[in-house]
Length: 453
Ligand code: TRP
Image 1 (cartoon, protein in one colour):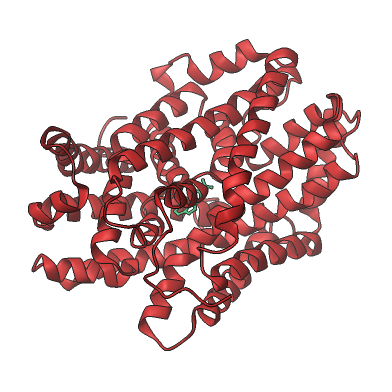
Image 2 (spheres, rainbow, N blue to C red; image 1 turned 90 degrees about the horizontal axis):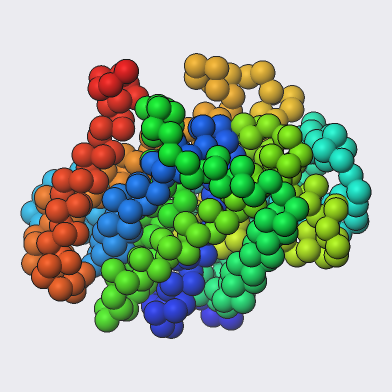
């Protein structure tokens, strides 16, 4: 298959929606959202998260697509081009450059977790969950983490899968597959939800996730929720921007962003409810952290009728969800190298993949041999990379993009690109100029302790 030219466009609106939804829906929804909810006090986190999706996420997704489509370039050169167009400082380029780096940093740990999911396909297929209790399932998980060589193997496989697709160009293969696989994931999630409604403690799960308790909204929980809204929607680093740069002119950015955000949020909430119904039924610890889905769902698979098939399918689909996300993490870096050097797309993808793989080894080791290594204030390697990217770099990138679109770009250019009704445009502009930057700043400041507590 020939390589697509860099500025090749999505074949139609749906391919763009599918690819961007594919980028958004991933481990963030099924693995991360449920455990973050548990670690950050349940409903308080969910509430702030939903608020952030609405007030920051959707407007910013429109903003990123708009920037990408207007610039028709990778994020770094795109920001430079747009800054020139607005006669602003060329330093805006840094927003894109830092974004390129952020994506690479996220993939270092994303591929390790993606590897866990692939490993679990085999567990499910082998019937390892059949009739197992929570101790057996717990040991299975800790056993996996303890083996550095096995984690390394799965991390390598996941990285290779990601690079392989990016090297071929995003338009081929995976995009077609995701058209079938994403809806299938949704169906399986619904099935699991029904199972845990019947078998699990669904009432407590609902209560845990939705009964508002504002006293639990600590600055830390709010920042985590904000960061996760960015992570979940793939915002703040140029992934959506680069996808937007391949989007045709006539497609409505607002409607598309809305669909994607709804689908993304729905998947997260479904996964959360399913998992918490099981957590409470089996008296597991809601704040178990990153191992949560690997310690709860297998219990359900082990007990339900046809659990071997459902479990296998589930982990396969999550692998695909993670795969369609991971490719968007290094697409900006790949596009950046390809558009600035004579290096081919595939060589660029392999080069970046090698870097993330190498750095990812430290993440692999942070779950076993280097378990006690701490980078900053008691955080291990995995936690440091996760926190640095999710709660700092992504919101900061988003803040800059909002400020750029709201205050620096010419109004006429933004209007042209968004093509909104005057009233909708006015609302969007108000949010992107004031509300989103304010929300991000307040949450940042409250964490440093300047506001509140
Ligand atoms: N959104 C994906 C998830 O929820 C992860 C992801 C893909 C991402 N591309 C991104 C996160 C860009 C931040 C930025 O799993």
